[in-house]
Image (cartoon, rainbow, N blue to C red; front, top):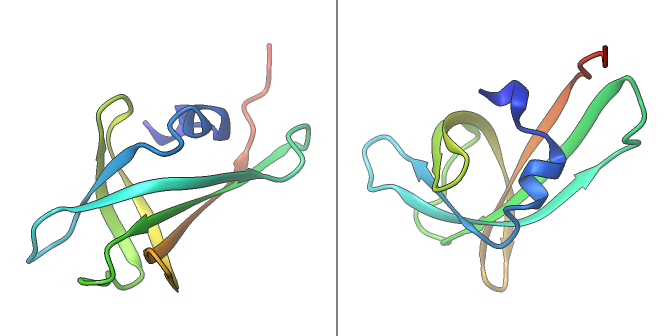
Length: 102
């Protein structure tokens, strides 16, 4: 599933809600705030996502199941960036070879 999710697809979901499946807790609602891509013509696809959720509970770095109304269910590796005035921010980084166009 993840191989089909690009920075463009995530950018179309800016400001929408993602459901983070947190063990031993209710799901956490995160808002996608930012999608940043380095050189879109490079052979290695590198982009990051920044999400915001509530301050409590704060999720430690790790792999979490995610659900989204349009993108479906998948897993991502989240890293807490720290709080901002509105909540806790988390980052997900993608770094992979681009599919070769035929």
